[in-house]
Image 1 (tube, rainbow, N blue to C red):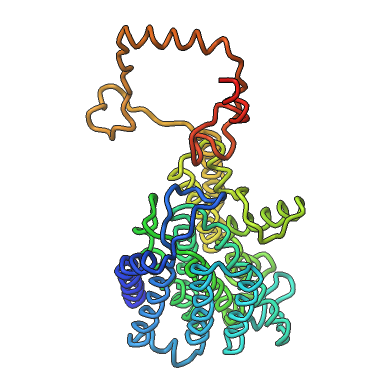
Image 2: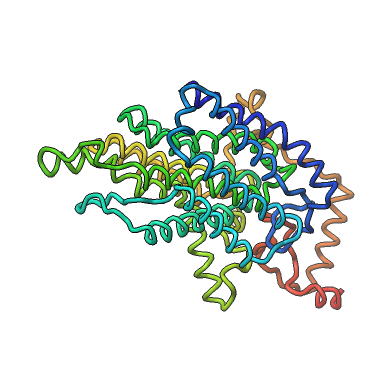
Length: 443
């Protein structure tokens, strides 16, 4: 565990220290695109944060290669080299996209090629544990197609959710933490050496996200761009592929006793089929909804819009920070809830706890404008935003002027419109007129 923590800390430190110089480099090279209709930030912000994250990945792999307890991962498996090869290719395409805005089909082809590079070096799904059937061996073509599909889906799911400051990095970090605990349990608890690469990948992925988050939290000083979102999506997919398709379930020797006992005992074997999907459940749901929505409107599935889950949270009145925290909450609930159930599948308290936390999450979604206020006796010790505001005194002259203006304005008929995506609670001030040209003509 100490070696994994050291690798995580080195990765986070390198990523954090390099993000500042990378920001200056992005500004100098003009990697600051204009604000688009779907963006929620108000000022042009540099991209290319994926450069720092990639060098953090390289630093983590280099340190792990020189640690005594982790060196065997590189000696017994070619998966770290396969990951680095695929990551380098997808990172390079992402850097070019952050600077020159590549076509969506070009990026899709690069994602498939990166997955093919990893498959060619041995990082592929060899078999699948299926409940009620057992271990099913896959042919090379089946394993390749399934691996490429999983990599492409994960990359695009992470890329789609990267719409708010700190959202993608935080959600992937939560997913990597849950996956690390699961993989470490298989490696240390069941002494399965084949789970060591996935454990290492998850630790490095956490370091990449933690090192970048301080620069990316709202208001963000730099964005990771496609060079970062596609990179961490690929690393997350590689971790899932390594532990799902490389670890042989038969080595756990849990299929003994009665049928009920065997089912509960074999749950840690079958959970890899579910965990890679649960840790990206929120991004994957956003991806599926976006494809259905755009196809229904006759648009390309890769056409950008403002219909993602985080955009909808802003529309109903949540602030930027609260929308990010809500997405964090649901990601952690799904990932760690599944992890806890895999460890103690017979405990009813885990199910009840997940249900209770889900109810809390629904309440948070339904109260977007709720701001708790401290009692009067605690006003001096709480932050200013939780204090009760005193009504400001209005001078008599100002009040008389406001009444006169109100009387004049009442004579004109104006049609107010709803805030929509440009409302005061989203990205701009609320418009008072449905058509500015008509309003100007009336004045």
